[in-house]
Structures are given as structure tokens and as C-alpha cells.
Image (cartoon, rainbow, N blue to C red; front, side, top):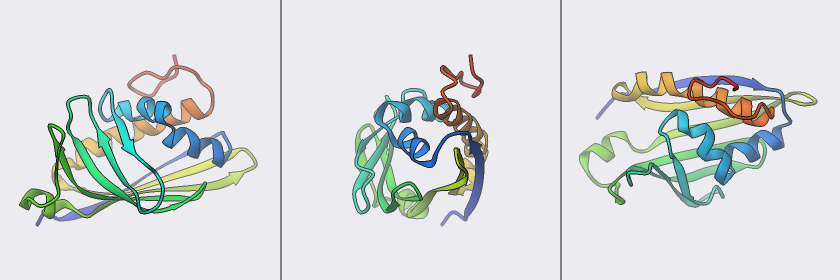
Length: 160
């Protein structure tokens, strides 16, 4: 079994918690901020607690998960259950079982009237740590730009 490590990322966004949450999980805005991971990323399913959700790339690859917990405008816990390759879910192989369940948690904290601290806690294996460590700050910069109404944000997370 691969050793799991929990890593954390944080950003302060100059927008109310409800707006940040809406932008983070909104169908179209999700596609924008997650482009920092894979251009064209999207999800299928529901963010409701207990529901299955698939995080997909345009190639048909991705991850299958369930929403372990969802407290509106406070906390979302995603329990990753396995991989998707060419559209086919894999939760049973040795590779999937070595990694799953892995958690990705989003915490939203009001720090001022119109500011929100977003904290991401994510379980990673050594194999993906460098990729995740590079991608999350870019994704959070894109999210921040969307929430603050900065308009278009480039791949590096900078406003254009």
C-alpha cells in the first residue's frame, strides 16, 4: 500500500463565503478553476452528502468519489473511491485499493464581512505529491480571481 500524506493549501478570498462556495462547485466555474489541474476538467453528479460524483478529464479519465460530508457554506469532504480509465470505473484493482479511500476536504471560514479563508486538505501518495503541490496554488489563484470578479485568469493564476 502506498503511504498517504495529507497536504494543505490555503487562500484568503475577498468575497463572502456563499459566493466562494457557489463558484467552487458551480458547473461552469468549476471548469475554469480546475483547469489548473487538467484543461477541460468537469464533474458529473451531485455535491449533496452521500452522493456519487465523477471528476473527469476530456479524455474520459478521472476519479470516482462520493461526497462524505457537505455542510453548506462551511465544509465539503470528498471521499475518493477509485479511478476512471476511458470512462470505466475501477474501485477494485490493487492500484485503486492502495490509494482509496483518499480524502479531499474544503473548509470555508468567514474571516471578515466579505472575506473567506479557503483551506484545502488533501490526501496524496508520493507519486502525485509534486503535481498536486504545484497545481493547487494555481487552482486557488484562479478561484480567487473568479470570486473577486477579476475576470479572465490565465493558467498561472494571474488576472488578464
